Image (tube, rainbow, N blue to C red; front, side, top):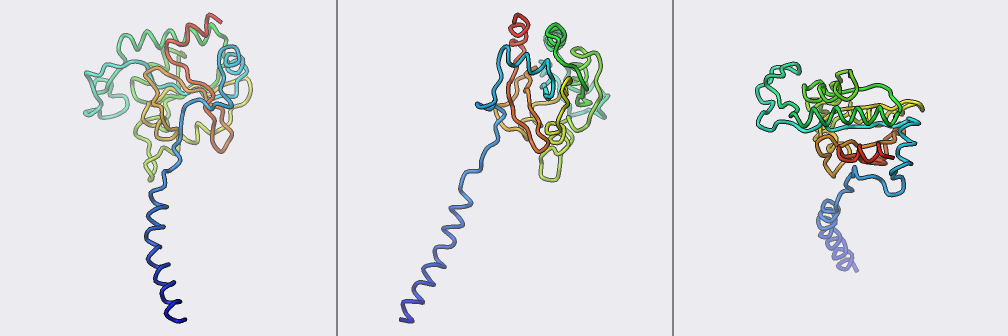
Amino acid sequence: MMHAWIALVLAAAAALPLQAQTAASAPAVERSSAPDTSARLQGAALLKALRGGGYVVYFRHTATDFSRNDAAMKGFDDCDNQRLLSPQGRDDARRIGEAIRALKLAGGEVLASPMCRTMEHARLSFGSATPTGEVSLRERGDSGDYPGLVKLLATPVGLGSNRWMVGHGIPFRAVAGAPHLGEGEAAVIKPDGRGWTVVARIAVADWPMLARR
C-alpha cells in the first residue's frame, strides 16, 4: 500500500514541470486595433458618431521623408535632425483637415507628440495643437508600454467634442495591437474609462469618400 502511495506522489511530482511548461506555452491573448466586429461604424453611421462627439481619433502622422532619421536629434524642437513630413505628407495633412471641416465633425482638444513631424501634421490639419509627451515615442513605462498614452485613449470624452491626437505608429501598436497604422491612418476609438473599443479606421484615401457622403 505504501509503495503505491509513493508511486502516486512521484508521478504527480514528475507531471508538474510538464504542466507548468504547458501553461507557459499557452498563447497569450493578442490585442487588436482592428475595428471590433460588434461595434464597427462605417459610412453614415461613422459620420453621425463623429459629429456627435465622444470619441478619440488617433492619427499616425502622414507620409515622411525616410532618407532622414531622428538619431542625432538633441530635443523635440530640433527639426534639422529629425525625420520630417514629405511634401506628400504635408498635402495629405492639409486635405485631412479640409475634410474634417467640410464634414462638420465635432471639434475638441488637439494633442500631438512634440516631435516635429507630428506637430506639423497637427498644425496643417487643425491649425494648432498641444504638444504632449504621452503621445511620443519617448514616453515609456517600466513595462515597455506607454501608460500616458493608455490613459489618454481610455479617458472618456463628453458629447459634442472629440479628442484628436497625432502620434506615431509604434506606441499605438504597443498599447492597442496590430494591425499597424499606415502613415496618415486614423483609428476611431470609443473610450470607457477603463479601456476602449476601436470602432473604425480611416486611411488617407478614405477621407474624400466620407466627404462625398
